Length: 401
Image (cartoon, rainbow, N blue to C red; front, side):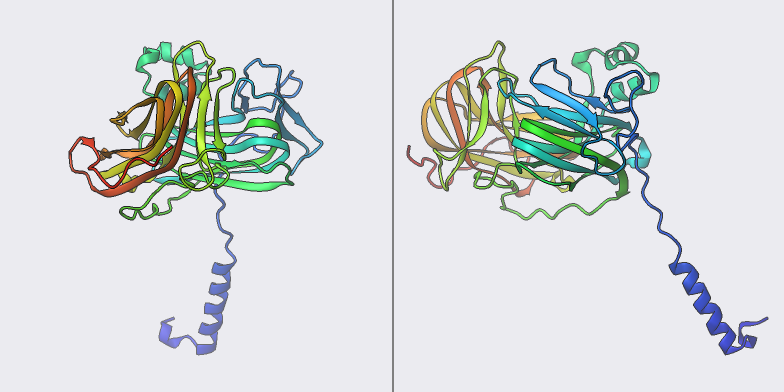
């Protein structure tokens, strides 16, 4: 029947029914990519290990991993990690690796998990990483370990193309909490083939985890990047320091800690020290900026640095992780022995294929002495210029003792 011949009342009723049908259609929930997300399944013939998950086993007697029913958030089981010593600093975590393909590119990966702390001293965390990691992907497909996958692929360890191009860690330090839902989000660039989720502890005490989820969702637009604005969170360590990554080898007595006894401005700085160790390594504090709008920009890194009887060198360094390779650029100044508060800075172009920028403030360890960093900054000063060299001189760079 032509539309003009349908009675007005009948037409109105038809439209109402159609509208109701449309509104009650359920939205399609994103698929959880994790296996055994509630830790309900157990590895066969194992006393406690949750199926499809892994732990950062070190062999140290001070750390304990467990799966039990005492404090489950959902279902019957949860998992936990507890540690009683930080003599050798290590990050202990539960993890799962998920292989992905082009269907994930251009989307956001979202990792959520419920956490509970018990007597935490230090920092607990959840972490989502997006890697181009062909060896791990093939190891998972073949059912072999990563070393065997490298051998089959005829890739030596020194030539391993492993590279992270998406990274987000959320750290928390509340001593005692009930169940808290936490989430991190990472844009998945082209070429990513592995996603890693980790939930763990850097410190002492106990953290409990349950009901994890990893989904792919439409990508949110990147945050705007204003010129001449510090992109670092908590740049002077006036907060709790949880915005920063602390990296250090597992040497006896090494420390990267927030310090309220020495500061350039405000009430705190970050202190690096640790005289004991057997091989040369780097330790420091850093932040990773995963914003694809940084590509093709010119960055200025700066910090105030102070050294106290340091028998190695302290310096700034930046890494650019992109589709081709990781590019490392050190600062033009190094500091050792006794240095009063001094401002150091340099400028560098961000390669066009960059998805992650790592800004490091570090020193060479093991070495006697101390290093302090304060008032760090990463700023976009304009488009790339092609000029390599130190930043142009500014105002006073020395701030006394």
